[in-house]
Image (cartoon, rainbow, N blue to C red; front, side, top):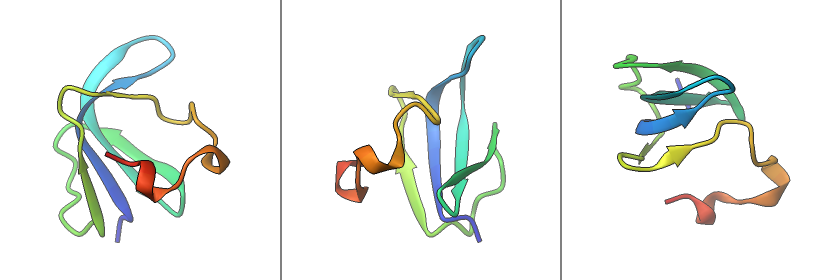
Length: 68
């Protein structure tokens, strides 16, 4: 089971920006893609219209109350 899915965000990658879903498992990025089957995720964060910077903010700098 995936821990968290960030859906529909504009994911900023080193060489591009894509609109996609991002899956997190055990505090790490498990997958990035469009319409990835994440129906069994524990948490879903809707990020439409938001930029997502995977790996840009160290885990020690935020907590779950900071999420949208």
